[in-house]
Image 1 (cartoon, rainbow, N blue to C red):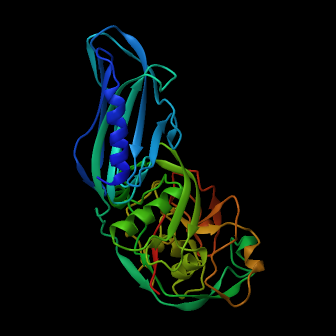
Image 2: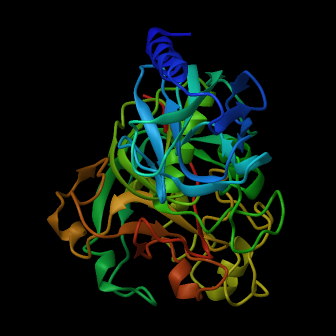
Image 3: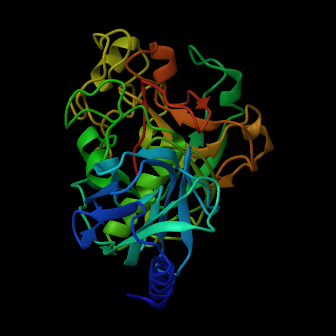
Length: 406
């Protein structure tokens, strides 16, 4: 064990040596001593009292490799120490096994088990409202490896080039935020052949909370923008690439990340969300029509699933006609989160020609592109722009990956 955990172990031993006999005891355990990325840790907690019944407070903590301690809270994990299971009543002579149960999917930030090293769950049982009289202490050490499952995601090479971004004034269904058109130069990158599927997402994150769970080869949806960013980092780590995103002050609602401060290193070689310019450039694949298959709604029907042909429901990826660069479902099926903050007037603030734009400097919404199975043909056009709050989940919004190759 590293020095940080060793120091805490010493502290717990010292506390335990002060315990009086006949007071409640507590035990915290994990189901294994060594875990790798993608494993689930089963953490059990039990408490017992052989004398008289009494109310107690139970405090749960996670000790990180650097010695930092995170404590469980009512709504997640925090550095501050507060009761998480308050006033547990321990009947005399009765074992509560377990009084609490968790299944944490690794790697994760809640608790923050996301780098290789030695960890430990710790538990303290005290009398209500004080640490002065510690009744019992327990420790469950384990080690964690960041190498884990890497799902089979086909990445296709998208060549560097230039294109006219946005729509011409006469395009049917055009919105004003799609212009003015300008020439945009885009560096080479890789993009996933399809939208990320339910199976791929679950293999990396350890959970699947789709509104419509259809099966392995259906696109994942019901994910926040922050969930997608986290997926990119975890997959980058599993594949040995440098993570593009730095996430701080991460907040959760269950498994879903609903708040964070996020910055992106576009020079890193890991996975990330496409910029809006990269997305449209890849979708068009050299075309200038409403859809990469043509201008009419019937042309869209060859390329993607939308409200006119979907059922309505999301469909398996890769069933429609791919574009020139081999990409499926760029039109319809599910919307796709992009990196950019949405700004209706952003195009008018950019130079012409423009090079590798990354969107507005801030905002309240992130861009989504491509339309979905539940939307009209107008919304599935190559130039169409929409947006969503990054903390919201939608039944028809998913994502696909890109990776810089410079």
